[in-house]
Image 1 (cartoon, rainbow, N blue to C red):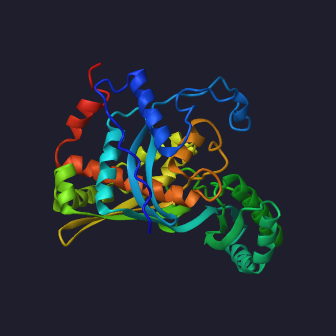
Image 2: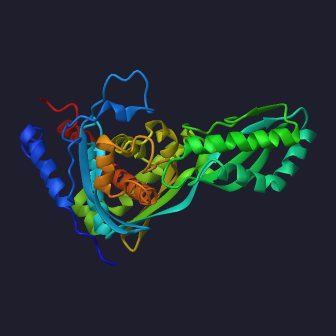
Length: 391
């Protein structure tokens, strides 16, 4: 497998935020990637491009945009070596993720794969009795062809993958799973769920019907953790002991011991998010790349897994409900389009690789932060780089 050309490491300056230094760094990236990034440099986006995306518009919000990396990942489309755009106001975040990406590079490279792909919707139908709900359940299997036809009638890119009914008392939860192409696809899936649930309601005599009856949308939930929703991704890497010592001043056993303590705390909390700082990286990438930031609560669902193997640290992250797209929504113009271009994933065919790169970035950030906790460098790093830094 041929490795891609490694982008240059981004320079740091004494006066790192001076306009000329920011411009020099941006121009370096443009030359290295063969891209123009006018909107990242402040060029305005025509307000007409926001039509259908917002009401009562007064302009555009602004956040600092930085690049972490480069990040080396073995994806389903081959090895990628990319900068990762992060939009954030949290000092030390980009530096932390960049350090974690250097750790993953030592693994040569990390390996990420989408292991499941499907957007679920969960309309609920209500019946007068359990017996009526059971009769409706029995009807579902014979209606699959009709459901398929309803979905095909509203989309060229989406497809109904699975129909999984379940009883909830005298209610029937109709779990519908859709392929959505390179979009998140929620509008298509909601439309299809409306049509399919209405068809079942007519056939079964449901008393009531709710298209979002069991609403997992944009909230942490146990179904998403177990079943997955959107793109389920796993990233793994084997970090050499020497690299951990050189780059992070820790040993594999320290990371493992720290994680075990975190896991005990998470068990008591009852959280669905068993990562360390996935929400940090996901939020920054979502905002930079024009994703729907409200999906952060679902997307940060997941867990880490560590083991020490022949002296090295094997690290994995599993994000079962990563809801991202490279077409539609806010991906098509302005800084979002430029950031997706920096990653090389904008447009058709990009969503799976985008999800895999995100999972690798999450693993990098969690490794770096755990190492900072183990080496007791977390507070010092924020004092040096973060908001507490004197002007």
